[in-house]
Length: 415
Image (cartoon, rainbow, N blue to C red; front, side, top):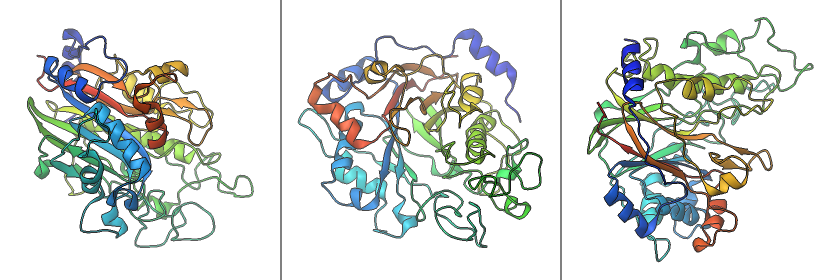
């Protein structure tokens, strides 16, 4: 059943989400204990630790993994998603222990500075990813003249299965029996999708006209998956009740040509969870169960969505974040996390700096609660340039071009 407008209207009327003022910057170490005594919400965090690979986390002493762990320990989240952590079980390396468990044991549980505390996450999950996974039949998805070759002919861009995957660590139990994964959902099964299809008007298929023009053939439509990694709903049993963590990492909306294939793919990946929480009937999970999220469910969307509000860059004209998050009453965006580092670069809510476009500053990582939950505080771990706190600025730069984003969310509904 599609989510009723009555519930959304009710929550807007009563002001379902209230934010505690004064938490801009970072809270970590021993200060975090005092903060949590005053405000008992659950802390959710997302962190894209750029291309953190198996050998780095399975052994101790990796500088990037250590820096990332220090950043996480600054925030002390209860529920954490790490984007771009290789799924070693898919990769076929160190298969006796998942990378997320190795990262917790070797880095997160070990204090990385004298003033920091380790975090023992009892519950972890490392979902399978479409990255680097080839279909049973060979296809030339990237239209380079060869079929069945990684990374471009995989369901999601990756040099090997599980490349650029993500994983979740939690202090709260996971209701594993009610996890819903949508990794195998076909893009063509989304009504009103934006897929560039060969033969349709304005779809470029002549590589002499544009050698990077990507599209799908009618045969490819039958197998091509929507999710470049996976979309997954993980229910957490928090102190205030069940909260559904909605995790995804849509493809970057660039690196393509006139058909804007990746931009349209990103648009529809971002759209998916907006449709899911709205209860759309077309959605089916990997076990074959149809339907979206129940109307009375509480949820928090987390991850690097590769989409920001009002970016205005030429390769990102579709603005899916604006459409599906900021203009959508099913996600609370009235108060966004900020940082001194982002403010110094002109965008206080920015979550990424640098990367493929030198000097770019953008907001693409999110922790967004459903409107029935109460946002107590939020921030981005990104100190000002002149900050001197224990070399934190150096740590955030060493860990990634993304910044950790956290939000304290009260899990007891407000109504």
